[in-house]
Image (tube, rainbow, N blue to C red):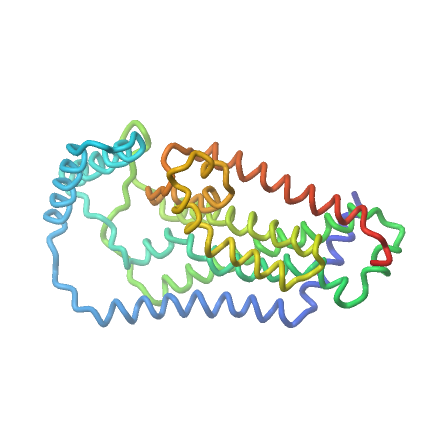
Length: 316
């Protein structure tokens, strides 16, 4: 165990000794602050008239009742609309204004966008952490050490995982700073239905929860990139394929949405934030089922990675 921890420490030091790692971290900070600044600029360019929030909520409630009166709704859609209806009725009954979408609190809660940036940067590290050893010709020296190969590969995978987690938390901290710099505090309150009653949502709890859900996408995509880089020894191929499944996954799910097999494809479950947003391309799946499917795919990716790396010729 001590040896493995030492290997992880060495990999971590090696990773942060590269200028590219610091550049990617700086890019994450710049991208998040840039998005916040752009959002604020667009918001300032629009001249919003003072709106009656009660009238808006009443309009949404009327629409919800109309939706519930239509046929063809799935059980999941009907449950979601009924929950929304309870929240809307609670707002009107207790005069609780909705939280402004461009308020400081909303920006902190909607932290899932950080994962969209973090996944791109983590994939680059995951794709090259093994493949670069072959590209640079250091693989023979690495595997010649009196250290078991599984420990070497584990240290690299753990380093990638920690790097992804670090990016997510750095992004969250930067988003909090951006929210306080660019946006004002809102007057409204975020509400949710917990299955028994309407309750107020914790801003910080919701932000961290959304961050955790979005990390699933980062972890699965990075694990896939790690596998491709380990098997094919090509970081460019690993990055290309990983970004392809990241950007094209939803399109493939929409194409196959009418078939039962779509429930068992990894793309269907990578974005766990769909359970919070209420928008699901495929009906009939639940959070536990998605977690189980993702776990199976992660195990498959890692088994392929370890099997290939353990059996590879040292002269490769």
